[in-house]
Image (cartoon, rainbow, N blue to C red):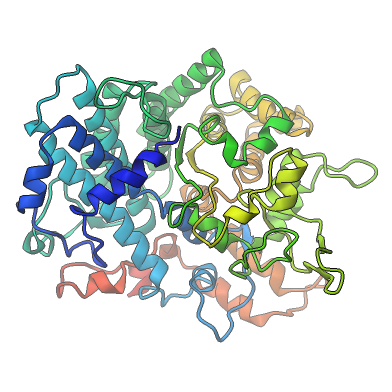
Length: 539
């Protein structure tokens, strides 16, 4: 059973407590009668905790729009007269401090922080009768707060640091903190606590096995390992964190090997991983979605163009978010003599077939656009080919797509580990396991040389984790914005080197050193004069 079935009821209860503010600083005072009366029993605290989990719902959209779209994995074309957030983000428009995506990501992430802080401020006053439940719930809340702050630091850099509920006046007096301070004062301590208090089988407030979808010990270790590896790269370059990352990631891998968890054993199983009936079977931690209004995966609608009804009846967004040439070529790199793609992830990740819509013989149409991401779209043909019933009739609007979104996967952990240890026997094994399952050759001796091996790890991360919000953070960690410049250059010139799209050369000039961060939203800059300093690339 998904955690989300609890979220449906929990969200309604928490609606009395957590106002849907347009600005995270516009908080309800924490000493109101409603909150004082509510946070008194373990049952109520569990409802409050589910309310914190509820804040994860929109994060898949930001993984798409603020990571994939910003990276060299996607191609979004050239700006048109119509304003589109994803186009402004993709083109590195310096004037994006006012767009909804940048504002909403800030607000939604700080909403998780705010709700976690409120939970943590109340939990010590509650009497728990089942041993270990209180510590577990605290660990879950701190895991979620760390997750939110981790994204805030990676997207915005210097942000306000608050570990307790705040009144409006207190919030309006809290300045930005340096990124390293946020790592050391909240993200790392929160995840260390989570590692010390979580188990592999979370319990509910009565001590029973909880629904799927809650943070586990393995999830905490994997996220802390990712945090340490991030700190070891650009812009902090804290090399002391690399060994800490290695130890945690190795523990996750060893646990998965010992238990058989999180690993799809063959290519067919990997393809079925991206069907909602298999939610909570493979990913270490995932956002929970179901077929219900406003409780489905919101990124699915935004990630695909308008399609013939052979795919889905619902009219999709029509966003021109396509697979960029570089990733497209990587996925198609291995072919047999007849031109069939050997990498099973290719057709499970991108649509290359240009299906004809023959549902209506009087209106035969064909999708004629560029290859687009299909990984999260459970369209009619995909489900039928994999042996699942058609759910098209249940998808009545854009908020109904049920497939969970992975925030941490074992394959990500394996490849982060390989990046750290290099072409050791275990590092090579991590890459070869993934390649072998995908149906492509294992590494050659030449590819096991240190520099070549790191390049192979990077390519494997692109293929395996495409459309999962990972790529942009990888590019930043390696200080490799040049990869995005190269993408625009490739589209700007023809085969003879003649410039055919001069606008794209402007985009290249807009990719400055400081654009590894997003701007502080304009709405925040205006909250109080002089409270925040805008990130340098956007001043």
